[in-house]
Image 1: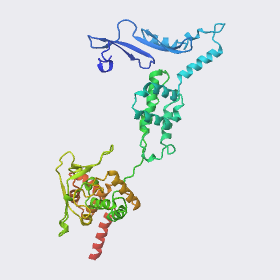
Image 2: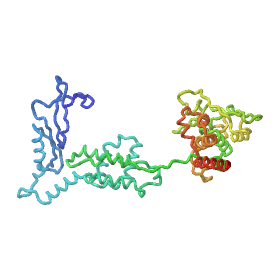
Image 3: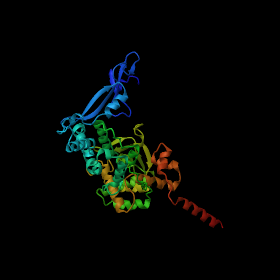
Image 4: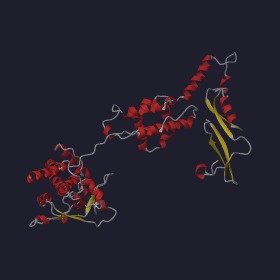
Length: 441
């Protein structure tokens, strides 16, 4: 036997372990202090077997007995008449009547083959109260929406093929809700079935029961969908279409100006929303000398009703240093937008609500998405402006170092995610060579 394991046996002197391929049969092992391991007893009967019997009242009970060998235990189980004690009630000629025999067989059949619904009701009575309220609500929803097809089936009839068909039916478009495109897996529903079947195997000790759940079911529970990459190559022409629609949104002037700065300076939305007038240097005499300092960003909480806050440092340098400041020259479009917007602001945050509070991420995202839809553009979200602004500069210069300096990335691999050539870049190069060849002729 294995070495003593206090984690499994909790310092017990006697333990009973299940005998493989012998249902309702366990073997006794005693702790040997000298050899420091569990060993079979030197005397007595080490095998303990159980079997179901029906008493005089027709109640099915579990009886047990000790034996010297496994063969004796199995022989005793097979010799059971499944109700010998319950057959004392006989007719006048000493035998059971046909009605009594049919009633006994029907009782045993019903007890051996409960439905999954009955198992669920029994499990719910025993264990449901110990679960969290949210878990209870989820379990009831899974049962109501997804388990009804197999709920009235006897547990012994639930085979691996039945599980396959049930999962295929779940993943079909007919049974998916209106949010089908958001569904990624049915693993939670499969876990409920596993819990109920495991409960049945532990409490009913059915000799013929085999767990129908296989490894392939866990893999089949995942809904495999082809995800198309979202377009990120927002051009300057498309941006101005988006800009005109954004002007019509709530706080449109502020939102549109922030979008111009974000696109042409290739900023994250959390960096653009945290700009203060003290960070903007507008040189009205020499406009090309205007500068923008980025040394803080907005943290947008994703839980509860917490409000966004401005924290020092750049988002990509979070955790390393809060003193890193990115300074970049203002591009003409951003300069003009801030110069026209300057009369409204003055001190503090440049882009904020009328009461001076920060925009929530949901406010910005909703305004951007609505403007994209109205402009009939395929883009969504706020980060697409940072991608579009970077690609604009990279396609003009063809220099990765310039794109890296614009983004403020420490790693060139990150810059490669943003710096992508336009689809017609090779065509333009070929056309340039043709024009030069024709000019030389």
